[in-house]
Image (cartoon, rainbow, N blue to C red; front, side, top):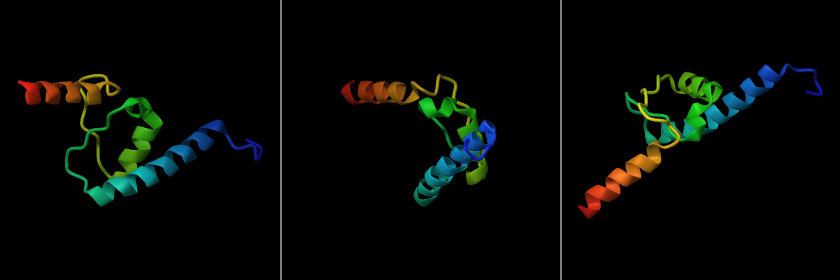
Length: 83
């Protein structure tokens, strides 16, 4: 902000930087046609848009709150493993 840059541009730059870092890791793992974006950070529209743009994908819609999907999946897996 010392350079009088707009707050929105600073936030966009941060989102792009994070998207590049995370996106490169995801590319190394391999990107499928259908990709989900979960966790609390999935609620950040700016980061979501930047990551979709960087990866060239559209994230699959998540029916539940993205912040709890990991916990739901773990609960389902635990139930399946323990009968």
